[in-house]
Every structure is written in structure tokens, then in C-alpha cells.
Length: 368
Image 1 (cartoon, helix red, strand yellow):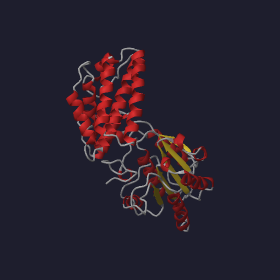
Image 2: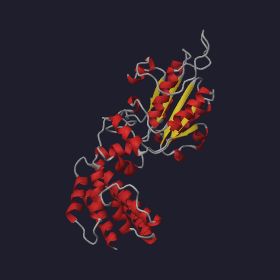
Image 3: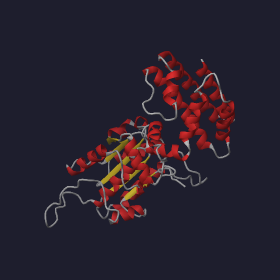
Image 4: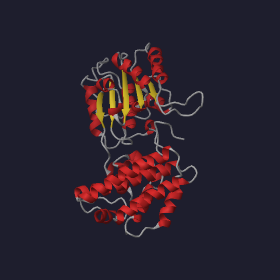
């Protein structure tokens, strides 16, 4: 079972040895360390699933395993490090892997002790626990690292408690805040952090990340990279939930208007309504929204996507969105169906009926 800071089906970021596609962010942190400009708080930003948490854990291992540069020792200062990589057999790396490193504290959403259900927020008690962590660990004078994953999950009280720590940071402490949507954080939190923005992954880096995670996607890397927007986390989810086939089924439904394969649409709807299929239902609506967005963009730009995410997709999008007027129409449909789907899920409408109605609306629009 995955934890709040882990993508289901993928290794925990703590256990991911190599980070792909984020050399610029890694080098920026390393430069700050080697030049004596190490900030006490860092905000790691970018879309979900591109390696922010993996970078945070790499930084934590590096900081806790690397002696300060001013410690010259008996034989002069050692050469400055050129990489954040730490030997997995290093004692710090081994302790972190075992969850037994006293200099590291990871803050995530926690179960409610009353209901034992996972909270949907990081609460103030989670942040206040850091005070005890710093107090108990201050006696040995070592470096301390905190990872907050994700800072977006903090409620108002937790955010204010963290802000106080950022305003008066403990000595030799580094806080690593992971944020998918930094605009939602308190401006005062953002202003007290140095930002590292991570990039989406290329298809080549995604292929290497899939290989490291032990997930075989065959020749589907390009399509997964296209649909996931360069997020390996989203691509893994698509792979595990058979998202490429679902997207291909959606494209097939609108390929030959005015024909509408009601049986195929009903099959999609029933699959999304099956017991325990909430994840597949949510993914289906996301893929519907993505298809509509790609139609709108094709109409607005006059260009179909350069990489097809489903067989025949480029020709279908070009035919159904030939001009800017069509692009605007598809954008309007995307807005309407998205709002309707969110409302339907919120009030527990029958998922099968909700999906089928959405697909019929899209087919009617394709018919013109």
C-alpha cells in the first residue's frame, strides 16, 4: 500500500536511486552548497510526478552524509563535491533507507488517531512535532533536514506554524518543501524559501525512469509522455490503469461522426461504475478532459499534436477541429462537461449514467 508521499505502483522517492531530467535543479543546489550560500529553506516546485520528492531525498542524503566544507581536517580541505549522489552503502544512506536516520524528519499527511483514516491535510500537530525533533537532536551539533511533502497539503494552522520556523530557523537545519502549486502557499512562506523549479521529463528520460522503476511499457513511452505531460508519476498511473487503451477508445468513439458506437460507450461507462473503480472513473474523466483540450488546441493553432497518443488521433483532431471557431466550441464543451462531471462526482450521481451522458454530448458535438 502506498503512502501519501508515494505514487502507487512506483518505488518510494526515498528508495529511488537516480533522478532523471533534473540536472539543472541538482546543479543549482550543489552550487549553493559549494559556494557557502546554502539557504535554510528550499521550495521544490513543478507539476506532480516529475521527481521533486526524489530530489528532496537526494538532497537530504547528501547534506547528512557530506561534511561542511569548512572542516579542513588534518590534511587540508577535501575537494568540493561534484554530485548529490551518495554511495548506498554509506551509513547515512543505509539509515535513511531503513527509516532510522535521526537527522531527518519527513512530514506528510497522517492518519486521524480517532478514525484511523488518512487525513486530507497536514495539520498543525504534524508541524509542531518538528520543535521536539530540533530540540532532541540539537545536542550533537549535526545537520538536520526536514522534508515536507507536500507543503500544499498544510491547513492554515500548519502553514502558520511552519512560517514561524522559517522566520527563526534552527541552526544547521535545512527545510525542503515540496509544492505542486506554490501559488496556493502563503506568500510569506514562498518569500522565505529559495525556489528550485523542476522540469517535465522528455520521452528519453521517462523511458529511463520506467526502467529504473521496473515497469515495462514496451514501445508506449512516447504516447505515455505525451498524455502525461512529461510527468513520470502520471505516466505510471496511466500505465497501471490501462490509460492508453482508454484514451484510444475515446478517440475511436468520435472518429466517424455521425456514427456513435453506443455499445463501446456503455462498456466504458460500466467499467468506470464498477465497485472499487473510483481510480478508473477519475482517470476516465481526466482523459475526456485531455481529449477535449487537445481538440481545442488543434483548432486554435491549426496544428494537430506532433506525437499521437492513440492510433489515428492526429487525423481525427484535425478533422473535428479544423479552425479556431471549432477550437472555441471544443473549449466550451470541455468547460461544460468538466463542471458537470465534478458536480456529478460530488453529489454521487450514478457514474455509468454520468459517463454515458458525457460521451453522448461529445459525440453530438463531433457530429456538428
